[in-house]
Length: 232
Image (tube, rainbow, N blue to C red; front, side, top):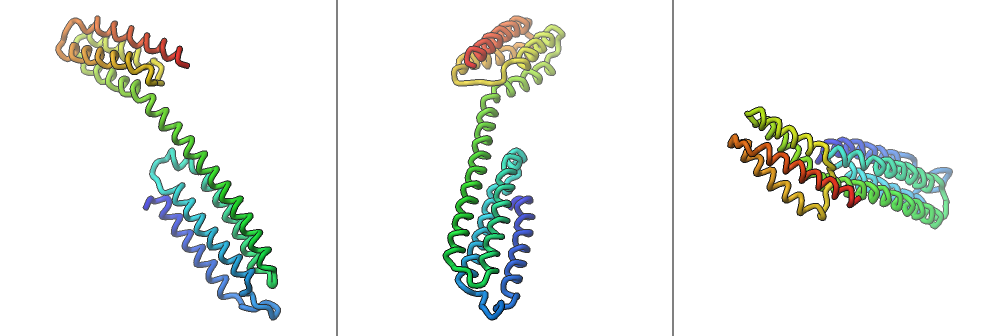
């Protein structure tokens, strides 16, 4: 159980116990009328559904250590808590009004439950949509991010001054390249990967061809950036 959700469960249990004690310790009759009528049980069941629903929403929103997902789930927490409070008030009114026709309580509670459920589903769908978009963007930028890290590492490994200059040229070209990738760029990105491997071997071996390979790699990166612009 994640830390955020664990703390929430502790608060949830305390509130549930307080509710149960308040409901069943108060007098069973008000002005000679038993409070345990049909409307009372409608309100009680509705509040219990609201408790369980809020716990489910909190689990969906808080049971993660990913800060990005926690941030995206803030609207879900806010909306579900607001719905819980309103549902609690509606249920409490049904319980507190003696002699209230049970069908009135059922209609009010069902309508409130339906509106709350729709709002929660919409908030969850929006959070999942944004999360999916973020994951896709992360995947599409993986090639340039990995290549940037490799280029920086290769620049640090270069011993000769000319090799260092060549690696720096490549690093700067990669660093300022368009980060977004796509399936249409797979061909030229494969060429870039192969050419970078050649450059890495040349730098490691102290080969003087490193400068020429670096220039070829920069040209390939320039071609890739042009294709990126065409695809937008």
